[in-house]
Image 1 (cartoon, helix red, strand yellow):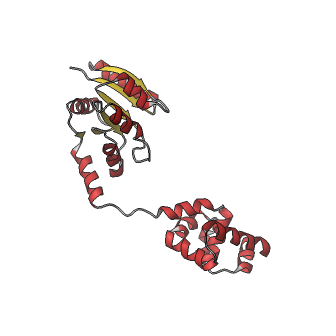
Image 2 (cartoon, one colour):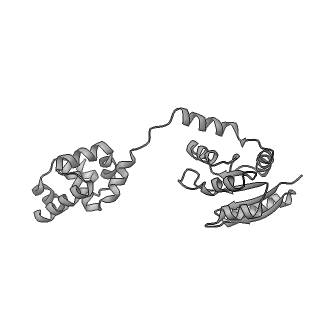
Image 3 (tube, rainbow, N blue to C red):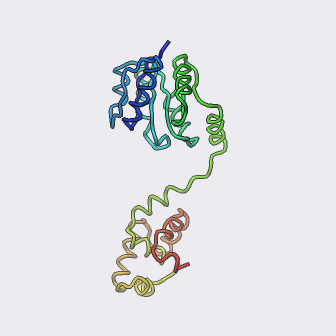
Amino acid sequence: MGVRVVVVDEHRLLAEALASALKLRGHRVLAAAAPAAGAAELVISRAPEVCLFGTATPAEPGVFEPVARIKRERPQIAVVVLGPVPSPRGIAAAFAAGASGYVRQDERIEGVERALAKARAGEVAIAPQLLQGAFAELLNPAAQPDDEGSRLLRLLTPREVEVLVRVAEGEDTRLIAAGMEIAPSTARTHVQRVLMKLGVGSRLEAAALAARTGLLDRALPTLPSAAARG
C-alpha cells in the first residue's frame, strides 16, 4: 500500500524528480514544492502520513524549525529528512526537532521507500552507521573553535585587523604607521577604534583578548602581508 507523502526540498527540481519517482512506484504524492517559506504550513494543510523534508545544510541553525512546528501541530505526521552525508550534529538536530528518520540524498529510491514505510509505522528510519556516528559525537564531542574570536573579527575592518595584529606583535604607533605606510595620527586613530570595538582599555588588553579568543589565528591568514611577516 502506497504512502501519502508531501515532498519538500529547497531545490524544486529535486522535489519534483523525487515526487515523480515515488508516484511511479505507487505512492500518493500530495504536494512537491520548494518553498522559501511556508514549508510547515504546506505540510500541515495537506496532512500526509509522511513528509519527506530535503535540505542541503542539516547542521545550519534553524533549518529544522519547520519540522518542529509540524510535530507540534500535527504530531501524527512523520517526518523523514533527506540530506547530504551529514555531520553528527546535523542528525542530532533533525531528531531533536522531531524527525523520525534521516536518509542520504544519494540513497536509492528503494531506500527512500523503506524509510517512508518505517516512519509511517512509527519506527526510526536511519542507517545504523549514521546513528552510530551521531552517538559517538554526542558522547565524545569534538572541540569547537571559539565563536567569540569569529564574532570579534567581524567587528573590525581589514585595516583594523592589521593594526590589531601589529599591536599584538608589540609594535608602537611609529612602527605601525611605517609598516602600513600611513601617518602616525592615522595609526593612533586606528588603534583607538580597535580598542573601542573590542571593549578594552589598553593595547595589552587588546593583545591578550585577541590571543585568548583565537582572533589572531583567524586574522593572520587574511592579511596580504602574512607570508612576509612570517
